[in-house]
Image (cartoon, rainbow, N blue to C red):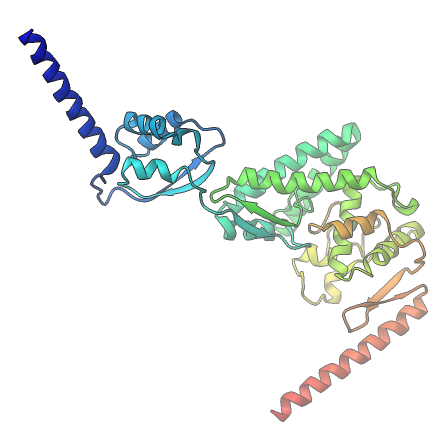
Length: 374
């Protein structure tokens, strides 16, 4: 009897000691040093408390996984773990550590990709927003674009992709810069990304969104003028429309002008394609630029260029597929007021150009006079 009481007493002492130790581990901060830093921990959807404990132990953020597991079971917090990215400071008591993962993680990063950006511009914007590697992003986007074009295009698509790859290689050698397969295929939009989103995940979001838009466009009605264009050609035409005008009332007319030129066997003579070839986007082109040796120089090459010159938005995609059926114009020029004058004949166009230049020269002269008065 006495021995049994001793054993029971020892058991109680051990239990009390164990509970005391567990409570201390549950509630007390543990020492930190210079080698311990705040870390970001990603919790995927459906992650168990056991998997979370293993992750935290491996990262040096948790000492005793059993304390966290017992606490998760006793408090029910193991069933309330949130998915997301969490910023975890070192030395947290297990109680606070577990509670951290039952609350929302870091807010997603909001990134707006404007219409008309080229592939490197888009990559740099994403890199600045949430730190993805721009080169890794472009590599992933190029691979995925080639893969999806092959899946959707069949044998003809494979031939077209191989031809485009050949052009991109020759252009790169000629211009001394990289041309990307994903050019035009990075859908402009507003996206929400988790912090530290992998570059390949971001690339997939943008590329798949643009292919989805193309699929919806091809499934809908198209004008007879655009009916013979492939998805890649529609995207190419839309990218030129995007570069030419931002006015909603003009996009379908610009699309009609270029399709009218193609129908009549004229060169597109689109300034934005030359700007893309010469890397002079947004700059004034010189006459010598129009002589540059490039498959994107639509002053010297007939037909559409081999690929897009930027990523068009949905409005420009629709304008490429459904240009203005009433527009017979084959020329247009800026009107100096943010819009364009459309002309059916060369004579009308020359007169519109003369009026534009006169207006531009008068504005420059007025600006110079005002500058002199200062």
